[in-house]
Amino acid sequence: MNKQQLRVIERAVNSTDELFPLNQTWARLYNEYNIGRPQGKKLKLSRSDKKELVTLVKLKTGFDLDQLTVKDASDFHREDVLSIAIDEKLLGQSVKKNRLAIKPLPGGRLKINHQEYQLPPQGYLDIASENLSDSAHTCVLVIENFRCFDALDKMKLNLGAQYHDPLVFYRGDNIYSEKTVRLLIAQLELPVLVMSDIDPRGLVIAQSFPRAEGLIAPRLSELEHFLEDPGKANPQLYAKQLAGCQHALSTSPHPIILNLWQKMKQYQSGIVQEHWINEETELWVHPFGFVNSA
Image 1: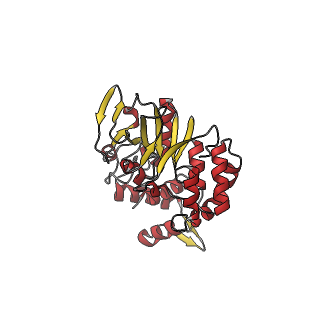
Image 2: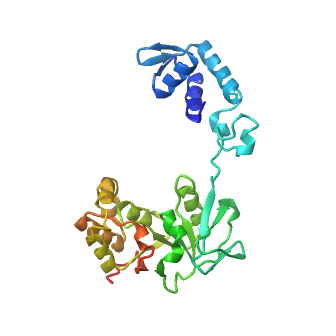
């Protein structure tokens, strides 16, 4: 029995309804355990059927729906789940919940919590957000894609004196939560730079961070060469993301975002940031306050 089946059963046993859509989850439960009675496209569950489902859940998983809800158990750590269920993976929070992937620039030292740490070139620190309370870095650099975060030492960065020593964050995915990254960055109250894909969604991400001061990318003239190159430009990205992003980009308060948006519309393509790896392409800070016409 999996978590989705558990949630479906919980909603049913806590409902006064008797009829439930005979969807894929209920069909599998009925075919396997023969509880309830199909009526067309519905499954009828009597009061005794619901009691039988509670007993079934307890037998199969060890979880007692009469004592706890799935939501109650969502904040349990895996070792704590074992006190209420047989399988530690069935309930509770994800292993990486509230954790961050951070690093300094290549060759620099990670300066957090009044300590300094030397990391290998393609290493990073996995840390619980509640354990990062202070940073001595000059700013924050958020990188959208993990490969670029991991291979930062293979890129040519020119951040200037103002942003010379950033605390680098991986933006997040299904393992590292972007929400956790944003909450921690808000607490640090440092200027934010963003290295995103140069596609519609990447630009929306870049301008969405509070205190974001600039976008990390090649010079505009080099970006245009990328967009002109069919071996590097990606029209599928542009087409897929256009509808969901065009309003936010067309109304952007940042000239550089508007400039890049116009270029994307002209070429109807985007560029993924992995092209910056192992390229002889220097990356610069494009400030949000004005158009960098270089």
